[in-house]
Structures are given as structure tokens and as C-alpha cells.
Length: 343
Image (cartoon, rainbow, N blue to C red; front, top):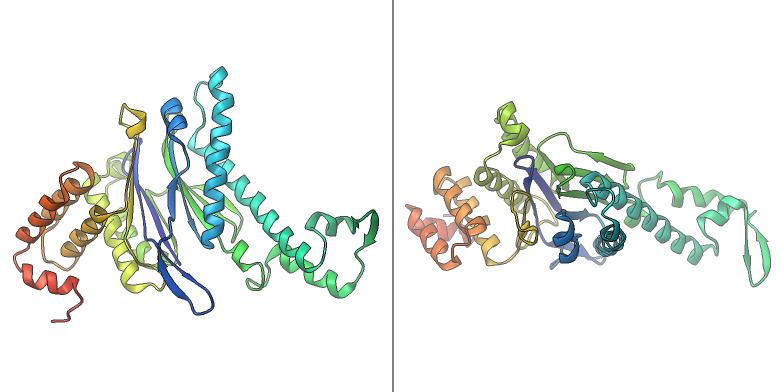
């Protein structure tokens, strides 16, 4: 269970936000330690090419970790080849990264399905299509009808259930900035095989989608066409993204824990500063500032200013926390609300 979300501010910058909760084992126990959105460029790639891209996964957490690790390696390998020739002019576009990520998703899907097929039936998908396989120098034909009838489910997931659900039930977000094509957002999915650019200013994915989509759509609808084309106020946009994630944490099973905020800023002249990742007391405080705004303990202008202070201006946590409590007329009621009291 997950809520992963991205918003484009302008042609060079945007934000990604997510929760950190996952469920595991048959008892659906919760654990708040999942790293759902991560940069997939190393510092060398970032410094040498200027590209700042992140990948977020919803579905099977272990597969998401595997995709992220493999994508980071593949990006580094491509950069090592490119930096010697500097051809083409730009290392990769965000579109190139999305296509590479989808290729990696598809490759890993095949690998994990083959592992299941080989463990249960003794052959891989390609061997099934060939109609036979070799083991210990002996050719074995696949002709048992009961076995043959079971295989299409592993390859197509037509029933939307069964043993391969953990493989197919995965989707992801590629979002970031490249000097080649600016800040862009892509949706990747194995549920209905997809790799496509997002035409709207935002994307919400995961089990929190139903909640976040309503708030984010309302936010987008209230913006003018010039704003949507590339002039979303950073503070207001961040406040709304966190507000939606807060609602998902309150109302959706499997969404919870600390929020993570990743700010990607292509306007930054120092490439190493183009990715700012926050998943500590500062992001928790930003979440509480958004709660204060949502529950009408403070006005929007004050909430935006405090969000800017804690996430973008690097004002010390203690100062912003103290100002939050001073800015709330009913500070006692606000603190009681945060602690879960109903009155």
C-alpha cells in the first residue's frame, strides 16, 4: 500500500511526496521504513550531466528496491560511456530515462516469472514457448495438457490474482529534470503495460490515489492555463501536495509513517544541489503545518510561509516549530488534535 505523487511547478522544477508504510506477511502487519521514492542518479552522474531524476514505486516493495538499484547502475554505466565522447550533446532526456526504466521493469518481470515457472514446472517462459527444454543433456518436451493450461496465467495475469500478483501488481513514477527536456513526469505500469508522459501538472499513484486525485484535481482546476503551463507557486503547490498525502494517511489502509519530500530544481546552477531530499523531523513538521491549514487552525498565507521556511529556506527546525505554535491562535486545541483527542 502506497501513496506516491509528483507535481510540476514550472519547466525546470517540481516536487515528489510519498509515505513510508508497507504491509507484510499474512497478518498484514505494518512497517514504517519503506523508501518508496529515491533518486536514480549518483553524484557523479548528477555533477557530470546535470540530470536529476527520481523513481517511485507502488506495489511489491522488494521489487521496487530492485528496480531502483538496477536503474541507478544502468544510468551510471551509460554515463561512463557518454562522458568520454559527449555525444549526443545531452546525456539523457527524462523520456530516455523513463523508457530505460520501463525496459528494466519488463526485464525484471520476466526474470521473476521465470523463477516461479522454473521452481514449479522446471522450465522458463521462453522454453515453454519453444515447446521443450534441456536438462542434463536431455531434451524434454512440454506436452502435459494440465501443465500447459496453467502457464498462460503466469504470462498474462489474466485472472488478476494468483501466484504472480506480486510481480504484475506494480506501477511507478519517473519524475525529474534534464537539460534536454526540462522537468517531466512519466507513469510506468505493469498492471496494464504502460510507459507514458503525464499531460497534467501532477500524478498520483498507489492506494492513496483515490483520495489524492480529488484534492490534486481540484487544485489543478483552480489554476489558470498560464499557471498550469509553468507557473505553479512553489509554496502553495507543496502545501497542497502534502495536504493530499495527509488525507491519504488518515483514510487509506497501508499509507502512513513520516512523509518524504523530494524537491527537484533545475534552476539551480550547481548540479549537486538540484535534488533536495527531506524525510526527517522537517518533513513531519511540514505535514503538521499542512494539518493546521486543513483543520483551519491557521490561514493559507501563514502555512505557505512556514512550509517555505522549513523545506526550502533551511530555517532551523526549532525556530519553525516554535513559530508554528505561536501562529496558531488555539495552540492548545491544535496540539490536542495532533495527539488524537476528539475534543
